[in-house]
Structure formats: structure tokens, C-alpha cells
Image (cartoon, rainbow, N blue to C red):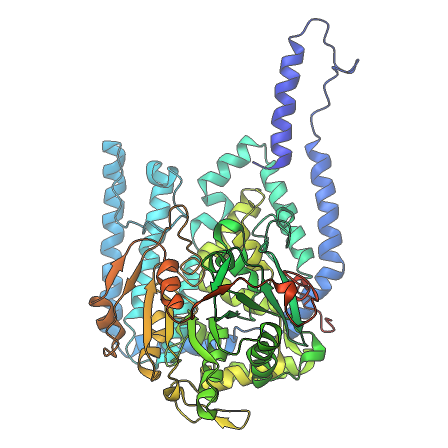
Length: 631
């Protein structure tokens, strides 16, 4: 219920109670009842605000965006995919006729079920949505004949269209992937749950609040449009409920080093003794590091410190236009290589373990291959979290990343100096559109509710930019060139990269439902590295499967199988053992075996380098500013 609607109901209840009191009289004394909110006045005020938003700078900005804005979605490529689908259907009219006949049969069966349900007072569905589909949880979708028929018709048509696309035969892999992806986006957008007049929960709430839920939904819509400066930037959480150093990124530590790209944090120990070899965490720079240090109950950093590891972490800078020239190899030299030198200077230890997240793992694997070629043996173990090693099948992200899209992206970023954070945010949202777009569209705009506080979604909205040159290097080398799976095709700092030279023991974690780094594209590390690799497959996805602490009741288990001779990931999984609970203790035991003897705990303030500030540092606090002159 919206704040205004709740206030209105409370006012009505108090007015009724006061009317029963002796001598109570409207408009007199402290007991006077405030007047009922004027619906017309609210509507006029909202209309005035809408006129200012849509008639002023935001509308102008929207027109500019529609006409000239770069988008990761290539409309011409989408049109080509659907034209290819149409041609495929035309070449096999029999298949189209059979599909049409099947749709008619299912439609008649549904109509029969509806009539039978009205007679029996119980409706049996023809199509059952999967348990993970939360769009139709309201009981009216299953109990009221009209809404039940609407829901079933939608699911029937959605399944029919999806199957037609799946059965298309004469399509190349890229076209098929694009066709399937955008068909799903269309099907998701057309759900009756996304429209006010066909969503029973929206109708009930509008009636109960006398229409104020819809007014508040429009207020939310206008606020998101203003906040996005012409882009509809859907608010997913109560941003005021969180703050770095307030209830997020609370692990104590000190910033001991910084350069143009990173601040290096050493975390304070929580044990009297620690393993001799420190742990350096290389997070992704597409998002901010504090996914690893959200709140104490789910902080990976806190857990690692408590296991007796001296933890260092690189906090990447949110790059501005002045850093547009930074290359992928600059991220290596100014990132892990600079951090290794700083750690040795600060605590006098040369041998280090790495832990790398997503794109941080790609950077680390390039660094390890180069170090192996040069005989540099400082890294004694390396952990890779949801890191792809073979980009032959990059999953649905491949829809956005191809040579044609890259040319357009490079043209755009040459002018801006970076790729704005909203583009990456939109891409990730479209990978899970019902959870990350349409559920909030319904909640915020149709139901007129404010989003609830959620630390993970706060972090998700705290997006980062990507510098132009690095982004071009990265996409060309890995998404287009598949450099990790093709030895000696990519050169960094004068060295050809060959992951087959890496003898460093590795722990590689993938997640079974990952939409960003498909686990089968992570598995090839078992075949590429020369050294021992422990591959672990966790439940859930790219974030939830990783951030699954052992404290409390871990939601997801994990699979293990020490046989790395199997090149087929599905064969590996078939023979794997499922383990209940969090993968964190399994990793901790593995890392301990590669971290040397125990020594006295290290106080960050007692190292050789000067302390530059407290954790979480300053770089992580830089908010996204998508303007062309962001600084």
C-alpha cells in the first residue's frame, strides 16, 4: 500500500473513532478531523508535474535519445533475425500448417476446460506456469474464470510462439540466438500481468485506494524518468536505506596504496594468527567490489578474514573521460601487478594467492599466462569465480556483442570516452527481464508501491562506466577473438598469451543458472591449465550462487568431481557428487592447503606503506554519472 493510501485509511479510521466521542465536532479543538484528501487537487498537482517533466528538459532529452542515442540493441540486426525466421517458415508451409492446427486444438481444449470449470466450480489448467514464474501468483489467476482464461490463453500463445522459434531449421547460430532472445522479450512484455485492466491485483488495489495507487504509480514513473534524465531508470530498492560504511562494506581495514585505477585495501585481522601467504582479491570492474562485502551476515571478505587469511582487495575506479585511453593491459599493470608490488612492499611477503571475480578472472588468467611465460612464480594459487574461459558460446550476452555492434559502440565511446553505466545495466536486466524489469514495473507503477530495501539491488544499481579503449580491447580479444581458448592469438605487454603454460593450482567456481558466464563456458579451464584445477559447480546464478554464506541456512548446494580428464561438462556433471550447503568451507580448506604456515596476524597500520584512509576507500563511493563530461 502506498504511503498516501495508508495515510488516507488511517485518517478515515481516526475520524470514525472521534465521531463517537462525546462533544467531538469537526473543525474545533485539537480533536478536529483533518479533511479528506482532495483527489481532484492531487490529480491536478500530478498533471502539473507531468507537464513540467514531459514538456521540459526531460522530453527534449528523450527526443534526442530516440533520434541519436547509441544502444546495445541493434534494431537492424533484430529485423534481419525476424526476416530470416519468416523466410524459414515460408520454405516449410507444412510445418506452419501443423503448428496452426495444434494451436487451434489447444485453444478449443482450453475453452472446453473453462466451460467445464464453470460447471464444476473448479478450473483445471491446460498450461501450468513453472514454479519460478511469480507473475501469476495471485489466486484470481486460477480461481476467477475470466482471469484464468486470460492467463491460460497468454501462456498457450507464448509457448506456441516459443516452440515455433525453437523449431526454425535454416538459421545460423547467431541469428537463432538473437531470434530466441527477442521473441522472449516480446512474450514477456505482452503478459496480461503487465497491463492495469488485465491484472486482478492492480484492479483490486485501485478500488481499495480509490485510485490513489495509480496516482502514486504515475508519481513513481515521473520520478524515475527525471532520475534517468530521459531514460526510464526503474527504481528497484529504497536507496536511502543503505550507505557505504553505514550498513554496507563494513569490514574494517585501511587503504594502503592507490593509483589512477585502483585503491588497495588491507583488511584488519580477526584472528591472532594468519596464513603466511596473503590473499589478493581481484573483483570485476563492471560493478563495484562490495558485492563481496555487503553486510556482515553475507560478507565474503569477513568470512575470509575469519578463516585466518590476510585479505587485500582492489577497489577499481569508476573511470571518467580522462581515463578513456586506458587499455586492457593497463588494467593488468595498474591492477594486479601494481597490487602485488604494493603488498610485497607493505608486509614483506612475495608469494600471494589470488581470488578473481568474473572479468577479474579473465584479467588474472591473462596475467598468470604472461607470468608463466616470463618465469614469474609469485602467484601460488588462484581462485576463479564465474569466469569464462571459452567464448564459443557466451550465452545471451552474445546478442549484444558482435562485430557490427562493436563498431557502433566504438564510434559512440570515441565521443564520450566511456560506455555509460546504463547500457550495461539494461543488458543485465534484459537477461532476466521478468525479475528485473517487469516485476518492478508492476509493483512501482501499476500497484503504486514503493520498492523495499534490498542490499543486493542497491549494489546492482550502483553501476560503473567502462573506458572506451579497454572495452574495445576486451570485446575484440575475448568475445570476438576467444583469446583464452586460442593460444598465442592475443599479446599483452609484449607477451603472447597461452593459458596452457599455467601451472598455478586453481579453484574454479561456476554456477548452474548463470546468465552472464554460462557454466559450460567456465568449465574449459579444466582442460586449458597445465596445473591442478578443482572445478566446483554451485546452485543458482552469477551473484546468488556465489554469495551463499554457510551461516544460517544456505539456500544452494554445489557439485564436485575431481576427475578433470572429462572434456565434456555434462559428462562431468553426470558423475559429480552433490553437496548440501555453502561452497565457502570447501574453498577455504582448499586455499588453506596452498597458503603456507601460520604466522602472527598483520595489522594494516603497521606495514611499510603509509595509510591513505579507511576502508572502503574513496573510489568505491564515486557514483555513476552518465553525462559526456563525467568526472
